[in-house]
Amino acid sequence: MDFDYLPSPGTPLGELDTPCLIVDLDTAEKNILKMELEANSMGVSMRPHAKTHKSSYWAKKQIEAGAIGICCAKVGEAEVMARAGIGEILIPNQIIGGKKIQRLISVAKMTSLIVACDSEPNLTELSMAANADRIQIGVIVEVNIGMDRCGVDVDEALRLAKIINTLPGIKFMGVMGYEGHIVAERDYETRSNEARKAIGILRSAVKKIESSGMSCEIVSAAGTGTYRFTGLEDSVTELQCGSYIFMDGDYMEVMDDFEPAMYLMTTVISNHINNQVVVDAGLKSISVDRGLADVIEPIDAKLLRHSEEHSKITIKRGTLNIGDKVKLRPKHGDTTINLHDYYFGIRNNKLETVIPINARGKFR
Image 1 (tube, rainbow, N blue to C red):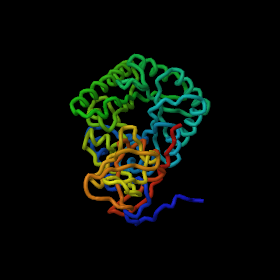
Image 2: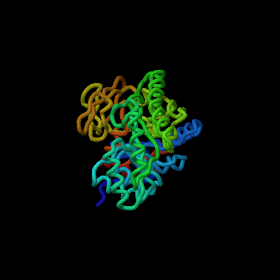
Image 3: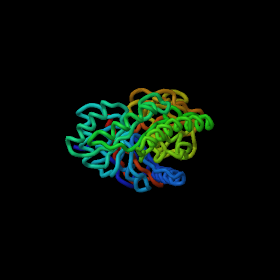
Image 4: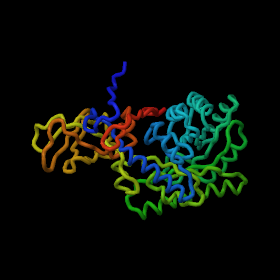
C-alpha cells in the first residue's frame, strides 16, 4: 500500500505537505545549461556527478543538455542509473571486494562502465572478475593531487597504468584527480592558485604516462568550486562537477556563478515563545554537517537549532502564525538530498512534477 500521499501536478506551492524538498525547475535547468555552455567554451566535456542529485531524472536532463555521461559515487548509484538507461557511467571511486565487484560486472553488462583504481590488488581483482565474464571494464588511475584521501603519486600512477595494460578484462582509459581540498575556498585567488597547482600534479602524471607510449583518453577532475580553473587546463578532458545543479548554502558563500535552485519548505507548528517559532523539519530532513541552514523566507528570521523532528527559528521583526511556511536552504545539499525520497519540482509557483530520488541511500 502506498502511503506517500503525493500531490497532483498543479497543486499550488503553499499547499504542499511539509517538510518537502523543493526544486525550482527553471533555475535548475538554467544551471545545467550554463555549466554545459561553460564546458563547451573551455573545450572540455561534462560528466556531472550524480552523488549530488541521486536521481536518474536529473542525470537524463544533464545528458540531454550535452553531458557525455555521469559519475556515480558507489555501485548502488550506478545500478540505479544503468537500469534507468544511462549510457556511460564513471565510478570515480575504488570498488573493493568480490561481492561489490560482481555487482560492478552486472552494471558493466548494462552500460559502458569506467572505474577508478589506486592499487595493484584491486586491479588484479577487477581483471579476474571481468575476464571470467568475458567483458571489458575501463579503468582510470586516481592520482592524489592534494586532497590526501585516495590516489597515488605520479610514479605509482605510471606503474599502475602499465600493469593495467598487461591484464585481461580491463582497459587503461586515463587518470583522474579531485581537488576537493580547495573547492570550497572562499578566496578567489587562493582557490585559483591552489586548483592550478593541484591540476599541475595531474598533468605531470599524464605527461609521464604518455611519454611511456600510452594514451590518456580521459583526464577527469574538478568540483563545482574549481570548474573554471580546471576546465582551462590543457590536459583535462572532462569535469565531474555536481553541486552546481542546485547550489547550497555553503557553495553560495564560495561563488555566484550559478543560482540556488533548491530549498526545504517547512510549516510553523508552534509559536508560544516571543520572537520564536517551531517548524516541522529537523535533523531527519536537513543535514548540518556544514552548519545550520539559512532561512531564506521570511528574510528576517534565523535558525537557532535543530532537534530530530523540529527546528527553532527566531524572528527579528514581524510575526509568523501557525501554518505559515518557512523556507530553509541547507548548507550542504548532497547530504540533505539523501534524506528524502522525492523532489517537488515547481514552476510558476505550482507543482509540475514529483521527481523520485531513486538513488537515495545507495551508499554501498
